[in-house]
Length: 121
Image 1 (cartoon, helix red, strand yellow):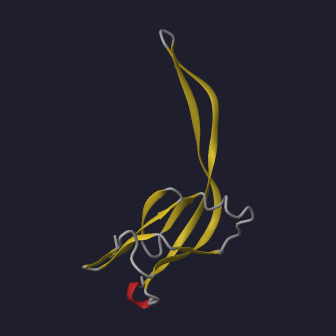
Image 2 (cartoon, helix red, strand yellow):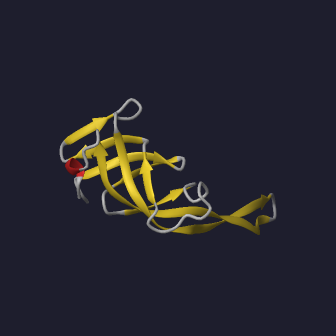
Image 3 (cartoon, helix red, strand yellow):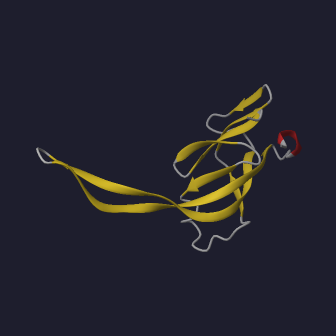
């Protein structure tokens, strides 16, 4: 576990992102139908940046905080099945479901006020 991370809000969920780690982001693949590898991504909804013992919080976001990254590849998530419960007869699964469109992305260093070097890996 590294001592530099950022809490971001993307795809309807909050993620703890660290430089160099890959994350699955929902709803990113639906923005561009032809999402190719190495597409640059910038996340502007950064909730908090922590570097060693310094924490920068925002209300709601710190000024000038951007989490930059690139898309490794678009992919589909695990299949979610719908099950219905029939009283007195036990569970009945009808096999319907879907697979969420995800984008696997690798986070590059997070910058604060345009300074990339303070939060390098």
